[in-house]
Length: 497
Ligand SMILES: *Cc1c(COP(=O)(O)O)cnc(C)c1O
Image 1: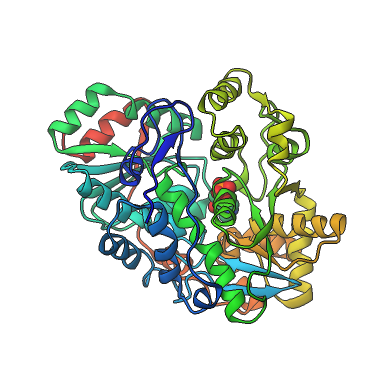
Image 2: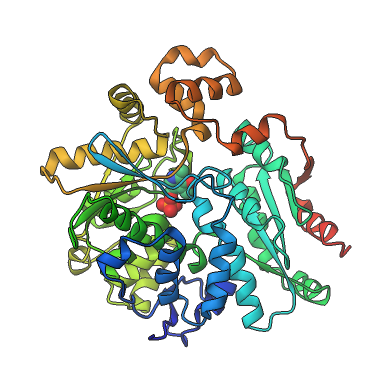
């Protein structure tokens, strides 16, 4: 097997091995790590159709994480995709209204981030062992809601790691807060801060860059690491479910061997759709990559004009996990369409942080022909939820509804009837109120858990464990601190003070 090494998108430093890229997360020059080439999938369609999720995961990940042994990688996969998921299939494909919904929400926190965050801790501790890191890994995260819980669930109880999550005390939904503060596990610590998400994020970055703290931590046997979505340890596991979706379509006879499919992804940070793009470049027969945005439609404008411009109002929507104006993972695509030119990419990224925008060349724009971008308004998103429910009784969440809306627009515009997989990124139970209001405004009067029961009834779906648990779970974390106190809080938790 050919070795894959990882380059930074911002300078021509020596490339590093996969395990080193996972440990580092981000390159010192601020760039993201990218594979020096995209390996080709070497499984025949006939064989692929017979593989389960974990087997597909191995076939895909072994090609990217080439310095992991077979035993190491299989151990990571087995530890991640187990009973934490409520179905053995891990990522079921559901046919509804002329499309295939790839349900990525059957993990511990009922959102697609579980797909990567349930394996990242194992990739990380394996990487630490391989590189003779003796320190315990301390994951430090600031969250606006979803990532925090998915990271907590992934790292809880994983030996050799601790995780500290900071969230804005009054800036997350009641269900999100309840999910986090009820987190079990001696190695977990959840702290609310009196400030907004930016304060939490800035505070965490400061701790990461605190050289003195790093020294003290090292002396005490600790080092920080990040579970951020730009880590290749989060990107690579996401390629798997597109290959697996294709395998399921083959197995069920929905497509013929090598038949092309389209993929629709509700997009925020551009991680999920980039994984689909990598799957296509591995040789998986994907035709169009349809990028769906909500009212924060920076990406739609980018695909339409070639200019990425974050200078605009930030809109709060009912699909909050896509309320993003800087899609970090897009940098990997920019680097690639710039001809893997780190200098050129670094220039564009400097323009983004300086002026808040950049423009790509006509030649680069031509390289984007596989992508189609569009967006859904709040009204359209709600109408799509209601329309699909009315037509076939299937209930989708708000993020998935953004994707379904954009898919309808795409079909209308192009007449393209290629079979299509829509990434279903969250359970409707995670965004119950918005979903139920979309179906009928009468539900607005009910309280959160009554709504959950009503959704279960009308959708004929059992209430997921993740929601059942927090109904009665005791609060285990009630620490609140000021943003200036974050360092002290970390030291206290690590008993370093
Ligand atoms: C994070 C998230 C997204 C956006 O995914 P990206 O990889 O950041 O583009 C979409 N939907 C849900 C439910 C999410 O949690």
